Every structure is written in C-alpha cells, then in structure tokens.
Amino acid sequence: MAYRFALVSLALPVDCPPESVPPAVGGLIAAAWNGMSRAQLVDRARRLDMRASLRVQPGIGPDGLTQFRLTLSFANGSFELIAHVRRVIRRRTGARRQKPSLPPARDIRQQSLF
Image (cartoon, rainbow, N blue to C red; front, side, top):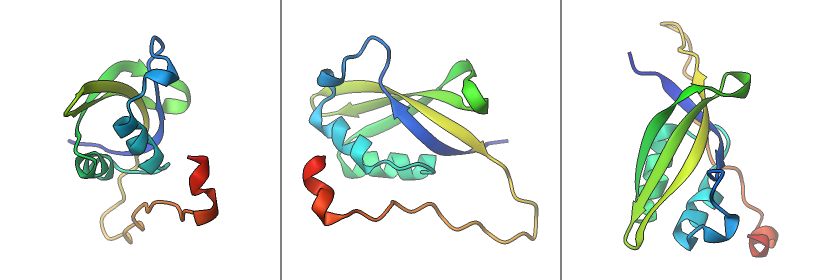
C-alpha cells in the first residue's frame, strides 16, 4: 500500500555548503512550503525544468519523520537535497476530504529578501 506524505522541510546534505546551491534549486526551495505533497513537489520541479526523484533513506528521524533523498536533475547537472516528510494518516471511508495544502500568501514587499 502506498503512503501519502507531507513535506516538513528541505535540508542540504552534511557535506554540501549553502553557497553551492544552483539558482534553479534555490528557486524550488523558495517555492516549497510546509505540508506540500509529493505530487506538488514533483510538479513544482517540473515547472522549473527539473526532474525530481525521491528515494527513502533508512531509519526514522526525530518526531517520526522519514527522510528521503531528493535528487533534482536539470540541464546543467544534478543536485541532491534531504527531504524530511511526515506520513499523512489515511482518512476513514466516508470522512470529509481534507483541504489541499496551498502555498502561503506571498507579500510583495518581501520579495527582495529572497
């Protein structure tokens, strides 16, 4: 049975300095939000001309989080991130559907900060 996951955070691997993040990957990180589904993450990557691949990492992280290795392939090469996700509890049959996770509202005045 396939599980549904919600993104909690994205992180760099331990051996990767923040300065080495390509601009395309930085755009995906800026477009990600807490609660994003796997399908939404893959769709955002596709919109930014990247191909996303998620591979589960062994073990369970803090607070029951699962770690995935997120490999992003794009025209100039590839880049790896660590995605911390939480398993979404399946709803019982007949229950109301949850509202989809939407990106947070962006304040135009803060665009220069990113």
